[in-house]
Length: 77
Image 1 (cartoon, rainbow, N blue to C red):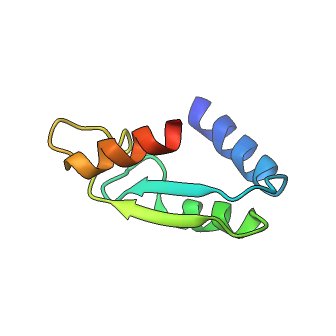
Image 2: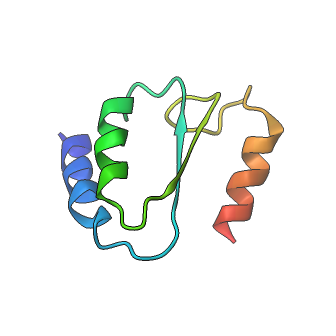
């Protein structure tokens, strides 16, 4: 149920984002499915950059390529 509440909140507030945004999704994500992500992306103005990476929902897995770690650290700055 927590995931449903977070999803609704993200969909509601995505339209208020006016700064450039980056949405990163793991290709093996079973929580945030691609159809839901597409709905989220459609609500941003301007549209965000969307990147799919070879990872699951958490993105940072022991077998994740090093570039994922570097990219997330860059964005977090």
